[in-house]
Image 1 (cartoon, rainbow, N blue to C red):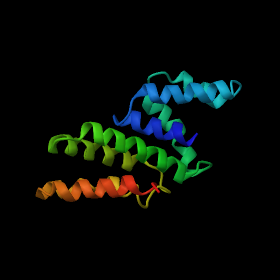
Image 2 (cartoon, helix red, strand yellow):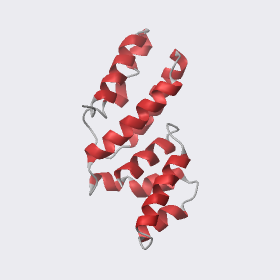
Image 3 (tube, rainbow, N blue to C red):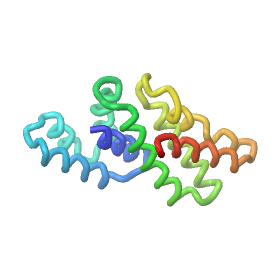
Image 4 (tube, helix red, strand yellow):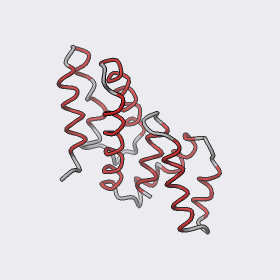
Length: 144
């Protein structure tokens, strides 16, 4: 379920795509076709905000935050590597990450998640290198 929640966050904030989310949702649904919660999620269709609203309370409850973070940051790094080749793209990435971070439940308040709130700050004084280093440090948090 951690993977599904991470994919939903990424999709909802423009940092991932709905195909990845629905692929994981379908996989889980095939494993447990009688699961009413998964059926409810299927019913939201293309409404990522509704799905996220329904999924995000799980982080405060039963989900493993480290497993969620590992999946989220792995996918976020992939998006970063594929899309953030210019300063303007990096600035947009920073805005999307900040928006996502603001939507996290209260128990997601430490590293590496906190980095998503401020890693683009150095861009305001022209320090692209520092901003990229901060993102890279967050991406490396669960590796190894």
